[in-house]
Length: 277
Ligand SMILES: [Zn+2]
Ligand SMILES: [Zn+2]
Image (tube, rainbow, N blue to C red; front, side, top):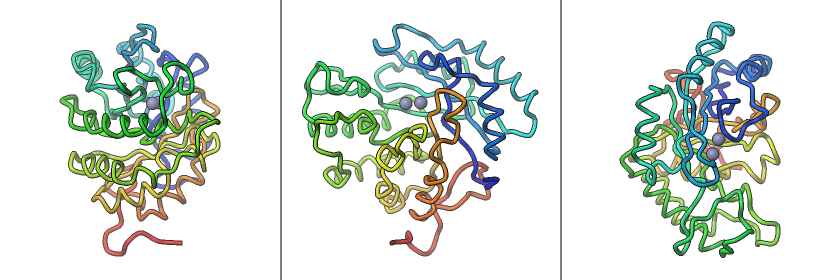
């Protein structure tokens, strides 16, 4: 897989509060073995209760990146951060960006306010009980606030994220049920010049958990979206590039090709429309 777009641009290491089995050095080794040319370590900067007050140690993290760059000179390593709800935590997010000077910044929505209550996607099905339709409409609505919020980021991460934690008792998630809302989000993201991430959910059942679904990538292209990135969201080295074989096919089928100008990204192919069938 020594493909020019062979880049995993959403990785977590031991510097993320929720990655106790993470390992930056071993992840670099895995990335090289998988034929990747570029990786980004996008550690969590979260400020909701679920993070338990954990804060990213920016200087420690940057030292670790520098060590790995020396150790793996044939791998391009981008520093990065995954901002959780930066539109809600503006001062905190701005401060971490100032401290880090990161190469690659993800904007993420992990929790959503539904009828006045903050709901963590990873705790769906527990208190507070919400209806799937209410949750997803609130989610897509809040994404507009994230995109238009004052804190700048480059990548819209894992669109449709709540489906990763979709309770078994709910009717299956179908992006077609929210086409209007999703297209609105994609138009705003395209206008903001964002990259849309295809998150392969660590390779776990990528057909079902790929965020967003393949059809949404086609809508992205139709909305004028120009760039896609691939991210496994690995929280341990063994998951680096998880699900990428399928994801590369999906991105290509949606009308994107390895970007010759920007290493690691996929660019919309001009001219002919997305492939079908
Ligand atoms: Zn995330
Ligand atoms: Zn992540």
